Amino acid sequence: MDDVALLTRNHVELLPAHGLETKLKLGRPLRVKLGIDVTSPDIHVGRAIPLQRMRAFQDAGHIGVLIVGDYTTRIGDPSGRSAERPILSDAEIDGNAKTYVAQAMQILDPGRTEVRFNGEWLSKLSFADVVRLTRTLTVAQLLERDDFAKRIAAGQPVSVSELLYPLMQAYDSVAVEADVELGGTDQLYNLLAGRTVMEAYGLEPQIVLTTPLLLSWDGAKMSSSLGNNIPLTAAPEEQFGRTMRLPDTMIADWYRLVVEAPVPGGEAMDSKLALARFIVARSHGQDAAAAAEAHFTRVVREGGAPEEVPEGVLPDGDPIHLPALLAVAFGLSTSEARRMIGQGGVKLNGAAVATLDLPRAELDGALVQAGKRRFVRYPPSS
RNA sequence: GCAGGGGUUCCCGAGUGGCCAAAGGGGGCGGGCUGUAAACCCGCUGGCUCAGCCUUCAGAGGUUCGAAUCCUCUCCCCUGCACCA
Image: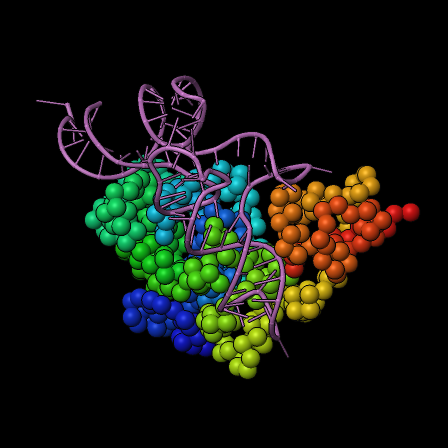
C-alpha cells in the first residue's frame, strides 16, 4: 500500500537514507508533520507543494499533522531573510491562522488531518522547560545554519530570539510525536534540529523530507512578500491570469512540482492553459476553471470586455475630465491616467480616446477601458 | 563610548552648488507583435483639469540669487577600536 516513490515524489532531501522504509514497516499510520507559520494571510501555490506531499501520505493511510505556528510566528522565522522579520500583532496572527486551515484543506484530506496550534504546548513551557530545551543543541550547532552564518559573517544582527526559533519548531515535533516532517528546502536546518531534539527527549527521531521551492514567473522563489505568488484564495480569473504569466520555459517545472504529471506536450500555449485550469480547478472547481479560461480568452486573447463589467457613476458637470474620471474608476493618479491616454491605452466603446475632456453624452452608457484589464461601464442615465 | 563610513524617487544605485523631478538597472505600466498576461521591440514611470504649477533626495534649522549637493544639531544604519568588576 505504501509506494515510497509516490510518497517522496520530487523530494530534495530524504533523511536518513532508508529511514522511511523502516518507519513504514511499523505497520501503523505515520504521523506526518508540516508546520506553517502565519506571517502572511495566504497560502500560495508554492507553499502548497509540501501540502501535496502530505496529501500523498494521507492517501496512503497516514495522518497529516498540520501545525499552525501561531506561537512561533510571534518570534519570527529568519529562514531566507537577511533581516529580522517584523513581529505581527496577535490579532493579525490569529486572523491569518483562521484562514490558513481552510486554505490548506483545498489540498489535504480533512478526514485524515489533525490541526494543532503550537501555542497549545509552547505557551505552557516554564522557563526551566525552555532551558532544558536549549540544552539539546549547542550554539555552534545553531550557528551552523547557513542563514545565521552568513548574517554573522556580514556583520548583521542575529537576535537570541531567532536562535530559539529552530528549537521551538523542533519542540513541536516532540509534542506531536512526529514520524515524518515535511518542509521546503529552506527548512532543512529546522527539520534536522527536530531530529536532534526529539532524540534528546527520548523519542525516535523523525524522518525529514524536503520539497523544492517553486520559482515564480520572475525567476525568484514564490513569495507573498515579493508579490509573485498565486494565492489559493485568489479569484479564479486572477489565478488563471497569473499562471499565464509564466515564461514558457518554466512550464515543465510547474507540471512536475504542481501538477505532478508530465507536460501534456503540444503547443506551449496549450500546456500553459491546461496548467492554469488545473490550478484554478483545484481551488475553485472545474466550472470556475472553465469560466476563468473563457474570461482569459475574451479579455486577453481577443481583447474584448469581460462578461461582468463593474458599473461606475459619472460625476456632475458636462465636459467630463477623463483623467479625473479614470482616477476614480481605477484607483490611478490623474497623472497616470493622462499618460495612459497619451499612449493610446484608454478606449471608449473600443476606440482609443485622444482627448482629455469628453462631452457627457459620449460617456453616458459607454464602456470605458484602461489598458487590457481595467473596465468600467457607465449605465445610461434617464 | 571613541574613530571612520553611510541614509537618494517602488527596489538597487549614480549624483558633491544652478543644465535635477534627479543617470543607469530592476520592477511596474502602456503600445506593437503574438492562438499567452510567454518571448521580442518601442515608449512611459512624483503629484496636479499638466506648454504651467506644486512637493520630493533620513529629520529640523542655517548659508546662498539658487542646495540632493555647503554648515549646525537630531535620529537611524554600518565598519573598526574600546568596554563588558
